[in-house]
Length: 367
Image 1 (tube, helix red, strand yellow):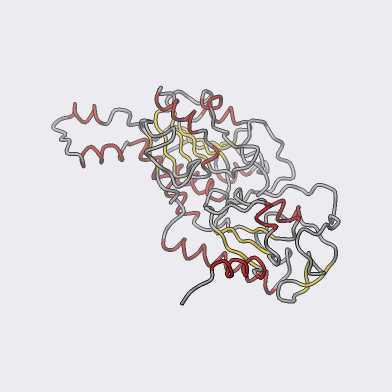
Image 2: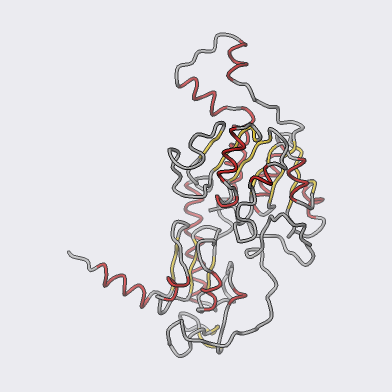
């Protein structure tokens, strides 16, 4: 049986009303303009930096994510990486695999140079969403003093969790023996870890990133690892994925653990992720857009010219009531700026941002 892929592709562009997508796909305004009937995109994961959500909203396309899945997996992986950095388990295991024999305490001391005691050290968490909170609770059990920076949380949240809050990124970097990233990636915090901010860290501190690769300037990190400014680092996410250990600025960096964007995965979380994504599509079909959607991240960009039906005839917002292409100009629903949602806010910038009227951010660390 022969399949006409061009014909199938055109059919998708002309008829698809819903789409599920992974982080490996990018949708620009030009891409979105090609869809004639698309009403909802569900990102299978939490980060939506690979979708032009503003353009989608202006075209009447709801963009949703799945922020609540795999929290335990990412938190457990984060702690696993932190423990590996402190106890150097990864490097010691590789030495044994390569045939090195440890015949006395002097050889152990030489090989394990850099191992550190956890109890009493300070772990700094940037972004206290679902995963950031889960990591904080696990880290306390290991004996860490836990501090966090998140300008979008209400005052007092630290008291309910027994954590210490700092109000600037600089304070967190100055106080932390280990820094763990758990925040979204957006235009405000791209390369928030760069040459300047790395120099504000404690000399010999550790860095862990299981959030978004673009948060870390890998050139600056490579230099910091080579000169010892950062003792060791662990990355599950990278600026360019899939990560190639044989190329790029980190290829010769010492004391570095890299994993393949797998912190989110377990058999259970994979099933959970698909179920949650499919449920959001179902809500769009049987309910109203955007009212029935649980995790719509671009409501503030919606435009509408009337109140019509949903995908399957349910009463809801009708973005294209005349059935015209998405590029048709319509008047915006409101010209006043919407209150930022947790998905549209940067969890970490270099400025001290007021946190009044803020709500607890969604977990944006899962992928």
